[in-house]
Length: 253
Image (cartoon, rainbow, N blue to C red):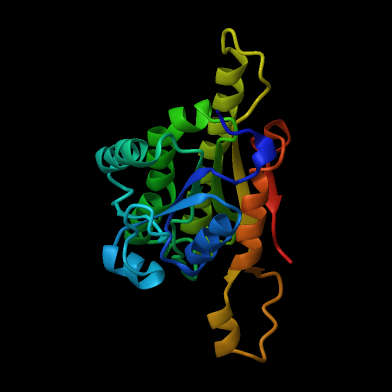
């Protein structure tokens, strides 16, 4: 039987891209607690194993792990096919891949920084969304989620590269949302309402327990804890797709 939104994340198969980061480990933990199969995907198998222990075997209760260069579309397509064969169709993709590069002025925004940000922040969004689009479109609770930055609302010259890359990723995600709405409206013989959604979660910066422990006297105003990010993401699987598709949620605190 196909899953329904009423199930929330229970039983969902969810890819967490960038899983070895603090946000990724929090996301995997929250998804598993909600009853989902969270597949940890990253660019380095050793970092994944350090974050989640040895790769899961059949029914051993561990975290499934996959090493993949998400800037390589052929590799992401192979990953998608592997996961379909191993787990069935994917219900969710949580994109946590990215990085920060900044400078002091507009003129010192380097090509090297732009290439890095374009690959990690735009190319990986394009590749994962295209490779898993049909799975998410067919799911009764398909969710594609990216994490963006509130900094793009009032970008400064010193992080023009970063802001432009994040803005491009958001535009791509909104286009994906329009695709879901259009494609599902045209389904023949299926009276179901919109079931899939592409969503942007915007933060000023992310915070984790290691950062708190390292600077116990600092307040971190406006930062979003990775656990709060994970909780908001898991909640999306329970929400009506039509109410969240194409939405941008500000998670600053």
